Length: 308
Image (cartoon, rainbow, N blue to C red; front, side, top):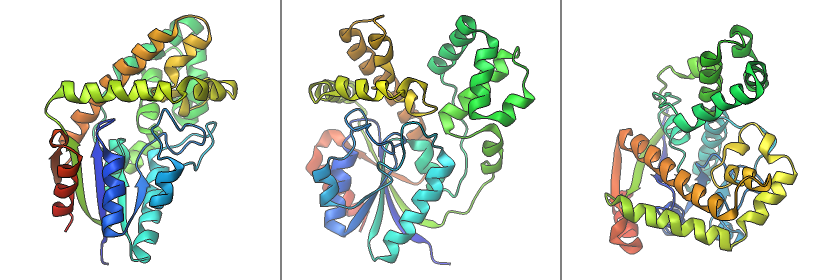
């Protein structure tokens, strides 16, 4: 069976992935498949840097606004939907261009559902232990039962360490423990792909871009967007509630912190996420690294050269 040609563009938050994808698609005749785990949710626009209606009019986009915030979404669902979209795009004679910062999603898509090793998320783990301490072991176990009943049935509520780990696996990967075991087998990729990694060795350059993006989001009305979603129950949703740029507002709405602290926390958490992204992307194989500090025009020309 002939493999489907695909271009994938990855990189940390605010590295210019979307801009490059738009220009590349216009140049080569492509369509974009979002590889962002939060752009799937309707209403989460500003904080996810979702392509604007104008940008979506320039180039067809897929896997954007396909779920309500109350719905759980997983890497397994992404692989299924993204693979189908890629096949349909290619059948139309267009180039599928997968773009996003959710490395796990994109790696599993490109590699035929091979699950990489999962790093622990210390911040999430701390929050889960705090939940057990403040609300009790049973409350934490009830939460696990709501997202992964099979694991909950096998773990005693007082075995907090295992409960925390099972929740961490689900919230980090979008997979239950059973699904993770099922998908961990090496698959055969259906794609002939070229992987572009937008990067800069200058960490401060990346962090400055992140900080500037957060300020721009606040000016664009991020607080109002999150407030609307919070009123619809965002804080209690299974996966949308974990989005950086949204969860930091919850204590502010509860009167526990001020807005300056919210903005500072969003910037800090995004920079921490960028560090984890860099670690993940550095491990990905068969990639071409493009230094974004050279400027958007040079990045575009380099991408064209690689994708010929």
